[in-house]
Length: 238
Image (cartoon, rainbow, N blue to C red; front, side, top):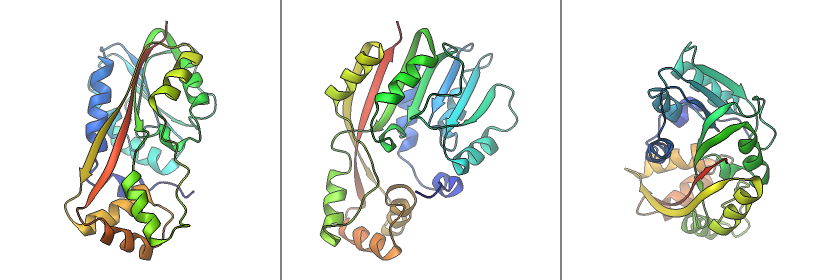
């Protein structure tokens, strides 16, 4: 898959901002925390979290050079910030038990499964550390994908994994987390017009599609609404 265009991503009206605020609020950050933003993207959520970390540190981890470039430009030469290029699916290049809290917004569903990422997060957390995670969950984009199949029954989609509550709880317990709270929340998102819908789909959702395919599905989405369902995870390391 091609790298992300960080500037194009940031230029769109993103529901991700609301997901990020909910995620950060759930962490109850204090000024001395060291926080890992796992799948930080362009650093939009990281910048908000950093406001609470007046004496703390922030690690921004992502595997996309394009996203990290935008993240670095947004946060600037801040000594509290460390930029790390790495995959969520492989062991993080971060010392074990060095992080107080982990946040992640709209990233985990790009992984083929979540077994490794929960273990990787658990490894870097200190005892008593907490996590707040947002990702696409079971039922995410069901209607949108149904419309896409009307264009072409054999059309290909990205390799998303939209986990459900039970499988997520099982993996969290397997990794060693406690006080696990897992939920699914519908978040339908209406964009202002068809032109914005096309740009949104091409930049975020169907990134490998042709413009002809993008135009065809956008015409079927007559209410300009994307049927998001969010997987929300809160847990602690004992």
